[in-house]
Amino acid sequence: MSLTSPSLLSSPLPSRGALVFNKPSASSLAVSTARRGVRVVAEAAAVSSPASSVSAQRTQPSAAEVARTVVELAPSGTLSVVGADGWPLGVGARFVADAAGAPVLCLAAAGVTVPDARASFHVEFRQSGARTPQCTFLGALTKPSDKYELKKLSTRWETKFGEEIDEDRLYLISVERILHMEDFNEDLIRASNGFGPVGYIEGRVWVVPSEYSDAEPDPLRNFAESVVEEMNSEHAEDVHRIYNIYAESDFQALDVKMIWVDRLGFDLHVHSEEGIFAVRIPFSRQVSDQKAVKSSFNMMAHHAWEVDKSYATPEFEKVQFLKKVT
Image (cartoon, rainbow, N blue to C red; front, side, top):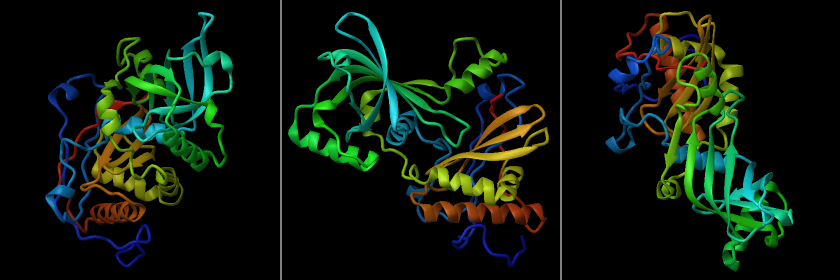
């Protein structure tokens, strides 16, 4: 890459402005020596107004927003219910979400359709083959009766799956509680390696139903995976350089992979001889479309290259890693 080379992605570089960073709390730094290494900072970017800036306290989506995003992206989940015969039953089911994010399932088995049956519905979505955020809904299995609502749900189903649906087969989970987990498998691995008590899931959060229904799914969700794939396959050197400049550790990174991107930033997995570490790098301002994402990455790669070549000096404090994955 040269000073006159084409930009990383086909969009102009914004001017560089003030940097935003998030310092780790004292309790986070005091956990174990496994939680060491990298500091997360936001990239330089022009800030048009205070309202568009990402505050130091908000560098990633809330649990409610992640759950809404998972429900929008996942095509199916697992329904668990006690049938009329008194036996518990778990079945897979495709679903769509209604306007408030409640799962609406298509059920063919008559034995599952107990009126107002207490039920749970588990949904997960694999992000770039590296992380699986998931959520479990607790409530009752009910039958939508409003004809207008059924029509809207039928339209959602056709949009998501490309097929018409028999409205008589649609059942709604009336959401009473939501359990969100950042990555169940990751937390089990960390616990088995001594980074937490067995049975304790660090990323587990009970989400208030009203907060869930008020939250919005991430605006980048429909193209996030393609952006991640492009960055890892076509711009791996830039991803690694961004990590080297915007993060700091006391070990050598053998490989750096982007695993997800959302409106507030992106997540990396850093592979080293000491294991795999996760680092979150926030954007300095929210992005809401593909053009803005590319512009932000383009600017970050350009700035990282300037610092790497000693053409510029980083004007930010690096924040240490807080999480070891494996």
